[in-house]
Image 1: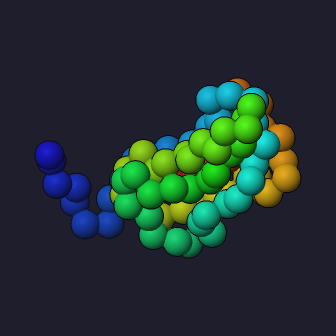
Image 2: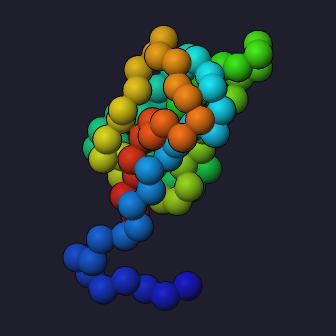
Length: 82
């Protein structure tokens, strides 16, 4: 793993839905620190609960959905900057 220079922003990930689903809960808020694998959003599809996980350590910079929303495949739900 290569270290970044201080002050250099890390990767930005737009975390998108991979299926059509209902948003049950949003587990994070803007400004919150997350670790890789933390649950960001909990979706429901076909009576199954599907956690959407952080792709890397970072800070949540945007939440683009809310509980009760229906998301489509490819809809960005959360943005995480490393």
